[in-house]
Length: 261
Ligand SMILES: Nc1ncnc2c1ncn2[C@@H]1O[C@H](COP(=O)(O)OP(=O)(O)O)[C@@H](O)[C@H]1O
Ligand SMILES: [Mg+2]
Image 1: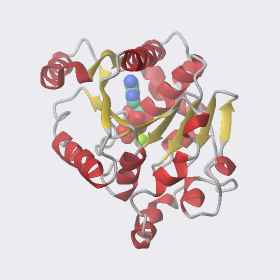
Image 2 (image 1 turned 45 degrees about the vertical axis):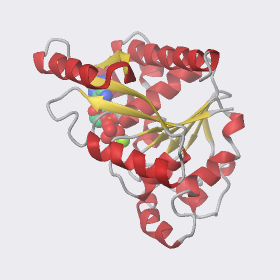
Image 3 (image 1 turned 180 degrees about the horizontal axis):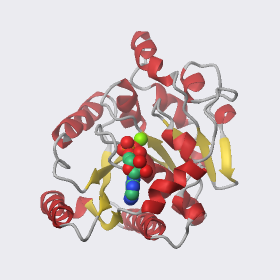
Image 4 (image 1 turned 135 degrees about the vertical axis):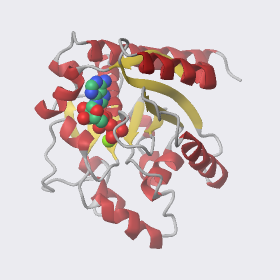
């Protein structure tokens, strides 16, 4: 049975999309079956996979609106391992349109449920807000992966995110867990970066991955070629780090299977 992971942090520019795209590519390279759902109206993950946002093919917006099945919106950049459900700017309106529906908070969960068995992981790239879209992702998810940028205000706002995670737990998703916290855009030559990393580790302990994603220009260049960094420059420090993160996630998962609680 697949695991649905919401990649969330209401701060913009912390590495949610880079993590969704590159972790997906790394897991797919390990021959895991991955689905990425681009749940941000900005559609950066869609672009990051080289998928046009011209609205010619169905997006997650049509799926939410009941105009397409999820399968009907699949784009498959790396068959058979990696499928993507693209986003579209119209998704911004869904936040308002959903408000009137009965299952407004569980719409994504109802959609993804039928597909869980087809994938090892479903990654949902969340928008930079704690609105109805992110709440849908948190209610659909088994766990939350939180990218934290190694900068001064990294932990600011985490209280709000944790509160929203609690709301999701109380309402409809009691078993929602924290998949892990990943430190992104780390610069080892920068003292502040190091300091933030150690503070976050002190506070969150083993919830923080050993793997740290370094600041690496290849990671920021890759989307302009419509590729995850792994397909753009497999030897770059960014590629190596995302492959490491993938294996850390896979080994944690086999650990949790081996030691039932
Ligand atoms: N490890 C990294 N090294 C260099 N630039 C990065 C790295 N991770 C992300 N970026 C850049 O930082 C910006 C924000 O990242 P993004 O993943 O889009 O964040 P979010 O989805 O949280 O808004 C983008 O321009 C991206 O290319
Ligand atoms: Mg993003």
